[in-house]
Amino acid sequence: MTKCCKSWRFLVEEMNHTVRLTTGEIANLWTQYINDTMAICVLTHSIETTQDQQIKDILQFALQLAESHIGKITAFFNEENFPIPIGFTKADVNLGAPALFTDKFMLAYMLIMGIHGLTGYAGAVSTSVRADQRAYFIQCNIETMELHNKIVELMLEKGIYSKPPRINTPKQVDFVNEQSYLTGWFGKKRPLNAMEISGISYNMQKTVAKIVLEIAFAQTCQSKELRQYFQRGKEICKREFETLSSILTKDDLTSPASWVSELTDSTIPPFSDKLMLSHIVILISAGVGYFGAGLSVSQRRDLALQYTILMADIGRYAEDGAQLLIKNGWLEQPPLATDRDDLAKK
Image: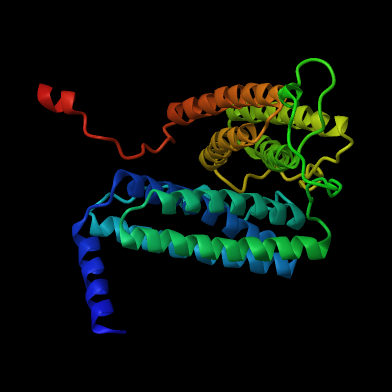
């Protein structure tokens, strides 16, 4: 390494220790800490119950990543004298509980959670300013891409990867020359384009995973109120799936496979009610964003309307879940800005 490079590296390291974390960086680290402590609970139990060694290897690799993230985030926060979040602990998982999901579903579950991770890490890189934060989240992205690749390869090998629908190759490049391309409420609708099909298909895959989780959590949670909430969520997700599936069916396109049969009959909870409710609220809140992404690439007005309705529906469900978390004292408060009016009163 040249003298110039060494000097620059030293300068960057010094700046990282003197420049405080921005609100974006704090939000990225805090959110990842909460999500990864939850992942550690789910993964440690799944590793105990998974029979397929290839799938167990992937779960162990994911667990190693999550544990390494917790160590690094803790170090970042300690340097800032920032309180370490509680997140989820050993008290939130029962390693002695029987398997709640089959090995195949756990692989499909990891696929969805990996996609969520990749989305979050890409956003974290773009909202980080300090060099150490950018480097950290770029590394998280690289590691998660490796995990994603392992999952997809194994799902393809086992023949359980649900591929998006195929369309025929166009014979030529074409341009839109009629306003009717955007219509969809009345009369004949044009066929779905590739971007619209992709958005619908991937949103359906995430919805299928949520249905299985909500059935499983309703089956094992201790609280009657939470059981009713999960059952309500299952019905909402089923309506979402049916709505999107009907759109694909009208164009003779296939829908993703269901994973509902990949659920055991165990009623012994492997996770705390706090973890199960938090998990669903996090997934549903993220689902609003994924529906928004589907909306952004939809050029038929009827699709835009359907996405808007779905977003409003699950948005209300997510808010009700947050209210339940608050009611039970389970919603850990993210870092807040200083209340200047409150300080002035004191």
